[in-house]
Amino acid sequence: MVTEEKCPSDTETLCLAHVVTGDDEVVAKIKGETCITMDGCAKYCARKSVEETGGIVVKSHKVPDFMKAHRGEEHGTGTALTDDGWKYAEELAEILAEDVKEIKAGVN
View 1 (spheres, rainbow, N blue to C red):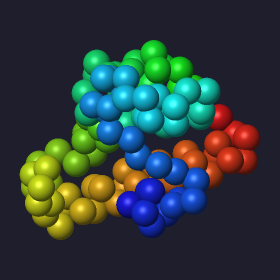
View 2 (cartoon, rainbow, N blue to C red):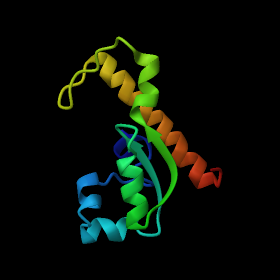
View 3 (tube, rainbow, N blue to C red):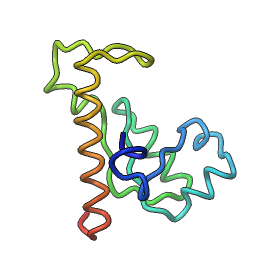
View 4 (cartoon, rainbow, N blue to C red):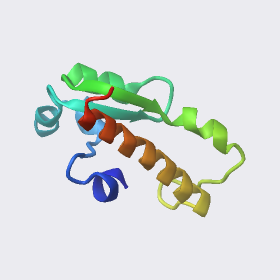
């Protein structure tokens, strides 16, 4: 939603597996660049990996932090979201899009 609809000219999503394995093309895109990470758990694998690759993480989020307000909702699976899942995805996309706007404006 962020890279295709909300901020397509200012964002790109990169696969964490390619970051972790040191894919040359992905490393070149990250090194020295401003990055936003979204982690699925408290271990911050995305943030740590992007930082180790040379990316400048200016915003970092954990999905579980946002889940607290959505207890009891069924969001679906990784391949098929429910209506609640799409609403949740939209909420996260709005947060990330706001991050992008703040970074572009020099607020971070």
